[in-house]
Length: 328
Length: 111
Image (cartoon, rainbow over all chains, first blue to last red; front, side):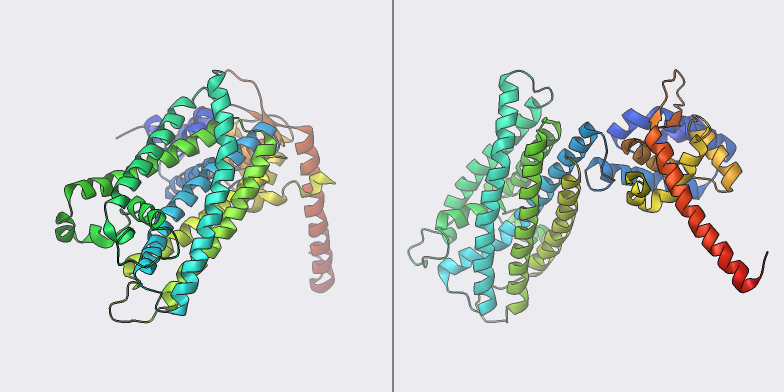
């Protein structure tokens, strides 16, 4: 049976590392005194666990008041932007799979419902806007990180930068390799022109190959070529490296208040754009009627994908709101 | 006045925040001393997780500050902004209490 110090140490682990570094010792002392006075209290345990989860959300820039101290406000803004980047990556990973399904289908036959056509146009337009916003957001951050790295002032930035670049390189090389290797994604002599260039559709398809219901059917999955299976397992890991590297770099880079405000505005614009993209996806699923041989047939994976995207969008909006509360 | 609205953003922590500020009004205290003091004058026991969420928010808002200590139990004290905020908060609560007591006396007779 463990004593109050051990139980207090276990409870404090619910809190994030940064919080523990700041409050850990004194909070542990309080818990030891509380545990000595009242050894059993489920409501106290629940309160500490809830407090730890709230502290983790605050650490991720998803809740908490606007701090008065400028450095705390900037840290909160950076945390919010990092969470926003993670949510946007999840949204685009799943959304890219849905979008590529539609634009590849359009290469072979025209959309069979008005809802599908509208959805494909809307989603294609928003993908373009999101790509532009991502570029505008990434360039100044990348420049700031590169300048700090060049001046040897970038403590803690080298590893996340390397992680980001490695993930990006794997996604680009693998996406192009597997996109080019499948005739259904463009270049086939029978294919129609389509809405977007075949190479773009193929790259999006190959990059999001891991978003598939085949995971629930191992027997069918086993029939896939080994290289494709490896890519399906490797690509989400590469994407995770890319996003983790970017998020960590954003959190650690000393971005100026003006740049944080600029990034916050881009984040808000990205949330609006993602909402429009999600609306396009919903229009496709709700407007589609069963037709034999349709290339635009939505499946359960697409409905689940839209639910994941809605959740990611909700968290992204909260992160964007928090990131804009910080820097004055 | 900014301090009138200083606890507006505290939401569900406004209650614990007021109790903490009131407890610190007579001097610096660490977490456990705050818990015992609040229990003695308010009759409520603020749970540890709630106490430290409120302390972190109060500190981020500049209403309290830690006192240098060699002890692992770090004490906190009120700042000038915190004292002004507490005064404004208690004034607002007193106005509500005065109105409620006056209407009770008119409608239900004196206590």
